[in-house]
Every structure is written in C-alpha cells, then in structure tokens.
Image 1 (cartoon, rainbow, N blue to C red):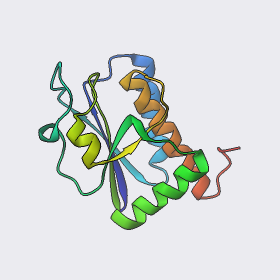
Image 2: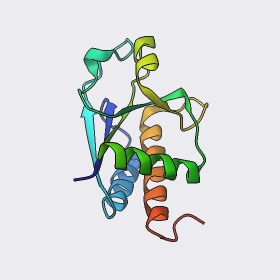
Image 3: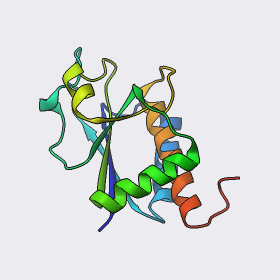
Length: 142
C-alpha cells in the first residue's frame, strides 16, 4: 500500500492548529494514506540518529533543504512514492537535526524562514493535499 507518514516531536497544543492538521490529514487521506506520528521530544538538544524511526525513505524538513515550486514538488513526491511506495517526512524539534543527519538524509525546505514546528506540519499537510489533488486532476490548485 502506498502511504506517507509524517513524524513530528512533541504534542500539538494549539487547538486551532490541531483542527487544521486534522482537516488537511482528512483531505489527504481521500487520495493517499497519510499517517501522523508524534514522537517523544528528546528535550533541549538536536535530533540524532537514535531519535529517528528506522525507515527506508526519510525526508527531513530543514531550512537547509531543497525548495520546490508546487509543480516541482508534485513531480518529486510522485517519484518518491513510485520508488519507495512508503515515504516518511520528519519535522524536527526546536533545536533541529544533528549535522550528521543533515548530511545523511534528503532534506526538504518549506521555506528559509523559521516557523513553529506545529505550523510547519500544517504547511506540509496543505502542500501534500495540494499536490495530491493536482496529480488527480482536482481543482484545489489554481
């Protein structure tokens, strides 16, 4: 089964953000199985290899990553899904990822701006819905 999993650290505390996360997850799931996994935040340090799930295709969200236009992101996501069938995105904690991880894994940037991790989750989900809808010929992306 083709699916996406999104890992993030620490619970979502803001009710408005939680509702947006649920909304976009529901929309994404109409096209492709999307699961959210909340991981235990390791605290006041960067994420290391020991904090990551052992999965085939991990994509770390980092301002140091590659930025895509929506159309290019659709192309890239399609390639990842075809190649790996299961794709895993990871949103780090407030301290980010260790240099070792930044060198080892593929990086995706939603923006070079720094944003709250909860908002990064909403933005990622909205973009995933946008490109999934676009890929099936939907009208969300105008």
